[in-house]
Amino acid sequence: MFGLFGCRINFNIEERGSIVSNTLKMPANIKKKFYKPFRRENIGLVYILPWFIGFLVFGLYPFIASIVYSFTDYTLLKPPNFVGIQNYITMFTTDKDFYKSLTVTIIYSVVAVPCKLTSALIIALLMNMKLKAVNLFRTAYYIPSILGGSVAVAIVWKALFVNNGVINSILSTFGIAPVKWLGSPASAISIIVLLNIWQFGSSMVIFLAGLKQIPQELYEVARVDGAGKFRIFYKITIPLLTPVIFFNLIMQLIHSLQEFSAPFLITNGGPMKFTYFYGMKLYEYGFKFYKMGYSCALSWFLFAIILALTALIFRSSNSWVYYEDGGKS
Amino acid sequence: MNQKKFISNAISYFILIAIGWLMIYPLIWLFFATFKNNNEIFGNKTLFPSSISFDAYINGWKATGQVTYTVFFGNTFSIVIPVVVFTVLSAIFISYGFARFNFKFRNVFFIMMLATMMLPGSVIVVPQYIMFRTFGWLNTYNVFIVPSLFGTPFFIFLMVQFLRGIPKELDESAYIDGCNSFRILWQILVPLCKPAIFSVIVFRFLWTWNDFFGPLIYLNSVKRYTIALGLRMSIDNEAAIAWPNIMAMSLLSIMPCILLFFFSQNYFVEGITTTGLKG
Image (cartoon, rainbow over all chains, first blue to last red; front, top):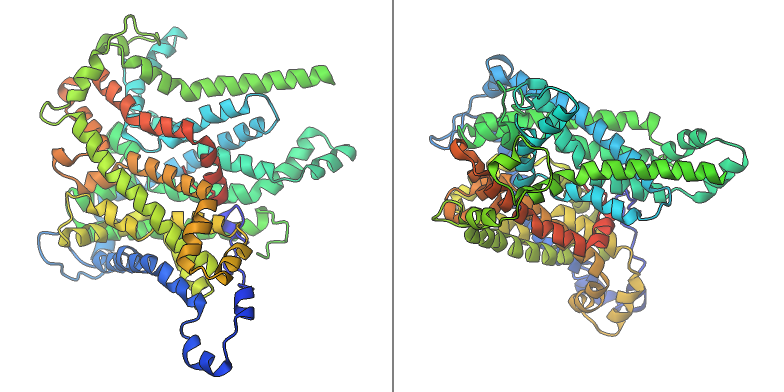
C-alpha cells in the first residue's frame, strides 16, 4: 500500500483481480492470435503515453544532456568543446566562491531544517490536544507556507528587517540597540533561516496527520499501566511518529539545499557574498554568465550531495525510524 | 485534576496564540503598511496607519507607467489558467492508466515517475533552457504551458493515490455494462475524484502563481512579465523605492492565494496528507 509517507511506498500496485478477465474469456485460439496483444490491460499504456513522452523530452533528455554538458565549456555563444573533468577541477581549485556558497548553503540547511521541523512538531502536538478553535490556529499557522517563495513575502521580510524597519523599532522599545540585519553575515543568514522556519505550516499539517494515525488504545494502555505524560511522549508518540519525521527531513533537506528566491531577493548574496547560496551560484553561472557547462557541473555536484545525504538518512533510518511491521514494506 | 487540566490548557492556548500572532504579524503588518507613507512604514513600530489612504494602490498599480499591473496580472493569469487546466486533465488521464490497468512494466514506469519527483530541478534546468531556446520558446508562455500537458509527476502520484481508494468493482460493473475505459474514467471516476482534483487545482495554482525562478529565467521583456517579476523589478531600482506602492502591490499579489486558501482549506489538508508534500 501507499502509506502516507514516501519512505514506505511499496511499488507493487496490487494485482488486478479482475472479474472482467475471468468472466469474459475469449476462445483460446482467438485469444492467442489477436486478444493477447490487445489485452484490455494494455489500454493503460495509451493513458500513460503523455507522461512517457514528457518523461523522455522534459526529464530524461535534460538529465542526460546535463551530464554531457558538465564535461564541456558550453556557453550558448559558441559551440561546446569537450573539456573532460576540467569544470569539476575548476570548481574545487580556482573557484573562490565555491566553498563559500557550499558552506553557507550547508550551514543554512543544517540550522533551518531541524528548527523548522521542531517548531512544526511542537505546534502539531499542541494542536493535537483537542482544544477549541483548532481550525482557526491551523489556518494562522498554515497561511505563511502557502505563500512559499513568493516575491511579496521576500519584500515584506526585507522591509521588516531593514535598518530602520519595524523589527528594530520594536527592539528599541526593549532597549536593544538596532541590529544591522542585512549588514552582517550571521544576521543576514539568520533572517533567511527565519523566513524558512516561518513557513513550517505544511510540515506541521503532515505531523498532525501522523499524530492522528497513532491508535488511541496505545495511550490508554500506557495510562492504565501508570506511565507519565513524558514517558508516553518518548515511548509512544515519538517512536510512532519517526516515519513522518523521516519523510519531512528528507523533503525539507532537498528543498533547502536548493534555496534560491530568499537570498536572491532579500540579501542578493550579500554582505560580501556571505549569503551567496549555492542555488544563486547555479543561477548566476547558468543564466547571467551563460556558462552552461560549468553550471551543469555545479548542479551535478549538488545532486551528488543530495544523493549522499539522502542515502545517509536512509541508512541511518534503520536505527531510529520505527515501522510497525518491522520495516518490511 | 480538573484544575490541572485547566492550567495545562491555558498554557497551550497561550503558546498557540502567542506564536500564532507572530506567524500572521508580518501579513497584518503588510496589510496596514499599504495605507501608510514611507515615513510611517520605517522607523515606526505602530501597526495602524495614522490615516487611511488608497494612494498606494492607485500609484502602485501604474508600475513603470508604460506597463501597469493590469498587464502583470493578465500575464500571470494567462500562464496560471492553462497550466492548471492542463495539469488537472493530464493528471486524471495518466493516473487512471497507472491505477487501473495492469500492463507490462507498469511498476517500472511508476518507479521511474517517482524518481523524477525526487530529482532536484536544478540538475535539469540548464538543458531544459537550451532545449526551449532551440524550440524558439524563450520569452513565451509555452515553456510553462506545454510541459504541463504531459503531466506533473507529483500530481499524477496524488491522483493515483486517490484512485486506489475507489473500489474497482465500480468500473468493472460499468465495463460489463459496455462502458469503454474512457467513459468509465469520465463518467464514473472523475466525479468521485473531485476532492483530489480540487487539491491538484489548488496546489498547481499556488505554485504557478508564486513561481519566481521560472519566469525569471525564461521571460525577458517587461510586457510579458508576471506579477512576481513585476514586483521584483520595482524593488530593483534602489534609488527611490516607493515602499507603500510596493506593499500595496505585494498584498494584491498574495490575495488570490489567500482567498483560494480560505475557500478550499479542507482540500489543502487532504492534499497534503495523502501525499505528504512540501509546502
